[in-house]
Length: 306
Image (tube, rainbow, N blue to C red):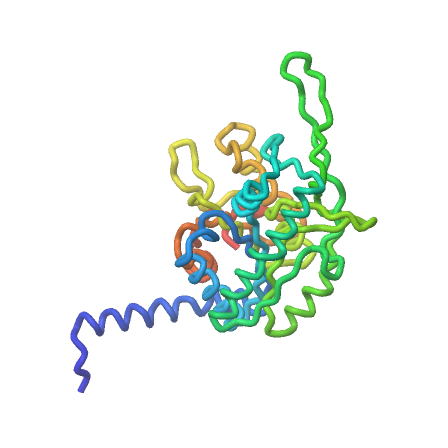
């Protein structure tokens, strides 16, 4: 005789149903690579960080191959302030001189990377921290940007110092990890062909890795629900042409533009779908991958759920 109360029975049945409904999604991603860019509010909240680590371990143990790429802008800023190193920005990008790039590498490839590795290990996984320098994973070149003077209309080149962009991805080292039970955690530091260190935007590194590794999905964890339409409602699906149109119309603006540009680039490299996910919500990675309809805004070639 079952002594559970009706309320308890319902709760158990509800949990069982949720687990059962996740099965087709687990099969969909079985043995597939999923790149997760981890940053924003989720990195600064202990409870969210623990939930994220558990989600990544669950993915690996469910047969998915997660690769984590992380940012760390606020932590870099705090360390530069502690060391009294002045940091300037141009068009939202940190101008990175030699002193700054040394601090960036120390914070990203050092303290932040190892905190994430430790959290995943404590959640029962086996994580290993890397930067783009390891195995020449991310060979980079200097990023060049131009800015037009609003009065003279003359364009000038912005010197961003040691800010780079991926020139070539060598995924052999990551493939070795994927064939094992190790979860790679990657700091977005690149190295030039001549050995210079470059600070690279984490979204950009995640997109380049997703394309080079033929990933099934790229998830970009952010501090917003996803792409919002002109009325403030979440847009669950976008095709590449629709995404470009929303940028041209000004619906997508500000800091969301470079994220969407990364999404578009990644899809054009052959990745099936890129999703902007609200990292402020616990277990948002699982909700996106294993829930009907997803959880954020998915950008794909056709805009049809895949």
